[in-house]
Image (cartoon, rainbow, N blue to C red; front, side, top):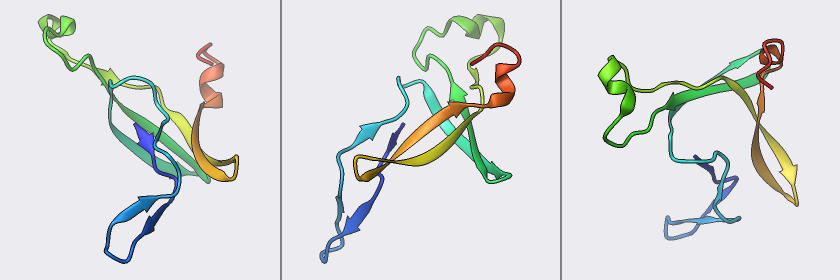
Length: 97
C-alpha cells in the first residue's frame, strides 16, 4: 500500500506528484483495505493472505484473514504529509502493541 500525499494537475490533465512515491505498509499481502471514522479517528483493516499457490491453509477450508485494525493519520514530516499507522490502544490490553 502506498500514499501520494498531494497531486498537482497539469494543464494537459496529467497529474504530477509533488513528492516521491512512498510505501507505508510492508509487503504485498495487505489487500482491499477498508476504513471508517469513529470519534474523529480513522480506523483501517484489510485482508491478508499469501496470494500465491500453493496456499497452505486452503486444505483446511480457508484462505486469508482480516488484519488487526489500526489507526491511520496524516502527519507533517519534512514539509510534506506522510501517512502513519498506530496499533489501537485497545489492543495493548491484550499484549498486541
